[in-house]
Image (cartoon, rainbow, N blue to C red; front, side, top):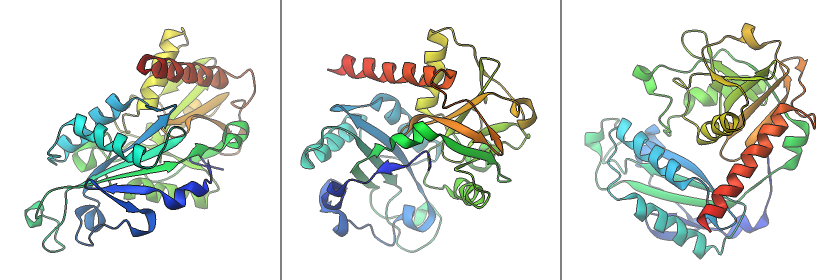
Length: 304
């Protein structure tokens, strides 16, 4: 079980993938071995949900994409409207209506030789849209996930700004490997000051004495689901605090949950060796998840 567990859909075998405006079948979709993203992880990406014929929070996703591009001095070269049109074109080509997860990837483009300096790049960016039928496994919400501490920490902004959604994910991958070896679905990562920052692929919230606690967000991805969760808590008078805290401050918590675009709000049932109440029907986690789903429903209605 993991935050990204999904129901396998055989339709994905025949999807069409958009590469620089051209469509290729899944088994024929290829990028040059000289691509900056392939060689060096030099690029950015977004994961976007397409639900009930609506691109969920597309505005915030594209804002973050362009902020990430600016942060790594990558010139995308076209407007946000063009990207939306290309995504819609891709969805139409695949006749997709619902339960779709889109991976949008922008790399710095091809290189004349495998060298890290962008001066070695020739030509424009590479732009890829991968749409997949991807519905979260309901057992994830029923059973929850197990999380625990790992030694890998989040870097500071001078090393690699963790708020930029870059292809350079080795830091998080190593944390994920470490978590797997320890028997965890997600690894809890500290920042360089020893405060809890995030999990390796999701944002993290603890519930202690009916109060929601999460990091200040400086050393983790500025998650869109994270921000929506904080919003619905504040709108419904649920105390929610963004602050610095250590594991010792929350090891006696009653509940915890993680957030992300694909899974939304996922309950944590085990914190290291301690069972939590996050999956209980009357849990605060469940209440917040329902409020979040209602917020998504309202967003869809506003776009209809």
